[in-house]
Image (tube, rainbow, N blue to C red; front, side):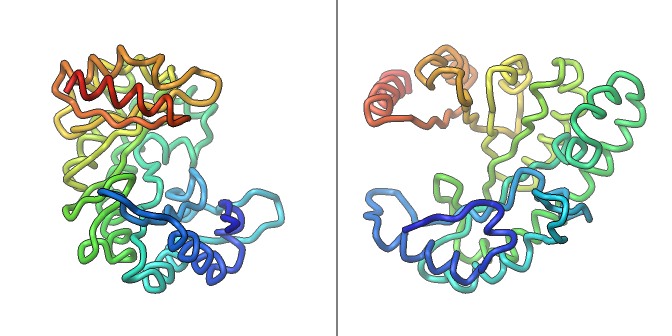
Length: 262
């Protein structure tokens, strides 16, 4: 069953996309704790669209948003699949989407007080955003799923822009926003992306709200097995770990390590 990409989900036939997703899920055996779910994402900057930006891939594409397709999918998939919350690229991610990553890097150095105010604005919208997401997806009634199912409110938070921040900047601007968002969503897993983000390991391990860390090496940076030391440090700090695997063999090795060290 052919899937769909971000561009098709934004501009294509949503009814067809939903139908294909349901039929694809029906063809899979969902064993154990697995729950059929659909990750209705429209691109990494979709939260900026929530604040009024334009989502586009080519110059002549039109304006779009994620809220209406999200609501339609929730209704059509009711009783069949759960909707996964969209990528919550908020906090510093939102500033990068609006300002541009290169310009934001310069702003962090040249005008830190302006960044203080900008981050206050970015943090202010999170609760409204989260309420809109869970209402559109009817998640309080059906549960929350982002790789794992939870009857209580849960989400994956992230700050991929952290790869371009020194630890002092991350602690000043990103971490307070992440802690605040974690308190709002109640159960938060942190999407810890690429080796550059490992510079913030100590700060993340000291977090009160990010109870689980999910490290992703990224393309060209080895496999999860190459980062066992990071998992070990997480366990020593009483943090839960979430990991993926590129193959069944890697999954077996990772599972064996977690069984021996949990």
